[in-house]
Amino acid sequence: MSWVRLFFTFNLILSTFYGEVFCTMASSPEDNTIQETSYSSTYAEMLEKAKIEEIDLPSPEEDGRIQTLNLKGAMAPTFDLMTQAFLNNIQGKRALEIGAAYGNVLLESLKRECAHYTANDLDTRHLMIAALRISQDDTLQHLSLNEILDFYPGSYPDQVKVKSSAYDAILCTRVLHFFPPLLFNRAIEDFYRALKPGGKVYILAITPYVKFYESFIPEYEKRKEAGVEHPGYVNSLLPYVNRELVQELKVRNLINEEEPFMFLDTTYLSEKFSKIGFIIEKCSELALNFKSRMWQYDGREHVGLIAQKPLNNE
Image 1 (cartoon, rainbow, N blue to C red):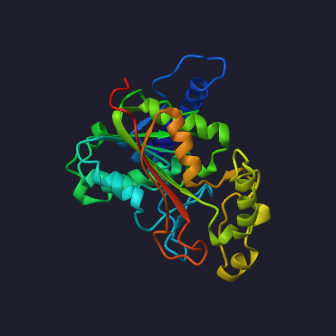
Image 2 (cartoon, helix red, strand yellow; image 1 turned 60 degrees about the vertical axis):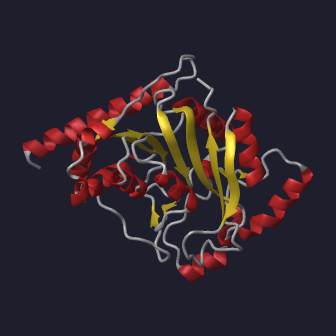
């Protein structure tokens, strides 16, 4: 290893360490104050990390999805209706994306002339790959990328604290179903805090009506009928995995089936967001936006929500 490479590697280790420490401090339960910022990286810094790590975009699955490196879901091959609505509202706006993965929406938002974009992901490697992809797109090199783009690695909202009333639009797709109820509530409260008055949040999440976990559907419907507070919440997905599909499709990477998961629906999302103070613009079941033998069930695979922070709320 050359001394130059060694120098950059050492700096990467230091920046990662101090970033993790800062994030932990910002979410410390002993600290009752709201931290307005947390560890972030510029485009140039994230691109340098990607080059040091020699990291690249993984190969897609059979259905076109690209599995995340931390097995927390996958990046879809096409844009769903909520993402399309977000993109149609992005020109000249300040946007925050939770769970940006490898940067598909980020790249498109830059092409649509967003004013500023904050990309968050639990796994820093995903953001490295997003920065690398931006560097490889000639149509984006005229932009002042260090000024209009920043990356916030870490677990939202506990390790990532963005400024209050800073964003016109927030996108959070295929993320909220990984949050247990208390974290779910903290996340949507933080969406409200981070949005400008009149700003909108765009949500997409998984319902119980997916082929891979279809054995959970009867239990879910019984819970709904019984009035269970969080009917879609499970401590582990393991009992509900469709093992026949695993063998038939030769699934290479499952998400971590032993972690908590919460299937969501229109009633749950509408009630929770309304309680925080959001005005619900749209909340409906949505069909899968790509073909997949693993996930397609009956056209209710996703739930989508668009909600607005009231204009008179400062």
